[in-house]
Amino acid sequence: MRDNQLTTLDVLKNTALWVLWCDDNHLTSLDVTNLAHLEVLICKGNQLTSLDISNNREFGSGWNCNLDIRDMPSLTKVCVWYSLPPEGLDLCSDGSPMCTLQLIAVNRSY
View 1 (spheres, one colour):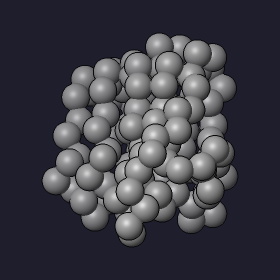
View 2 (cartoon, rainbow, N blue to C red):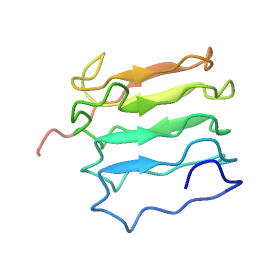
View 3 (cartoon, rainbow, N blue to C red):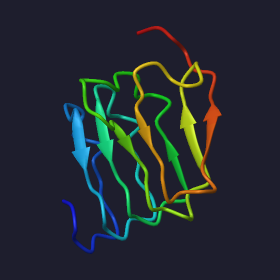
């Protein structure tokens, strides 16, 4: 689903996804809150203003960049789980100068 002209993408019922690669589209929102097993999210080059990954605590799997939010100047907030920087998160954010990580208190019963 990369390098298309998608404006919407509904992945909420795809709860088994562990990799989501949807970069270089025209997405203005992306809801990954139901993807508890998500390890890699490549969503650079879209038009997101915020992103909530506070339910996604399995980032890792040895990828160089498991959260790629580059090239989104409109992105201002990424909500993350209990620690800064989140354990296992390898962030790539060049070209998203306004982006800040926001700590969200979440229930750690996993």
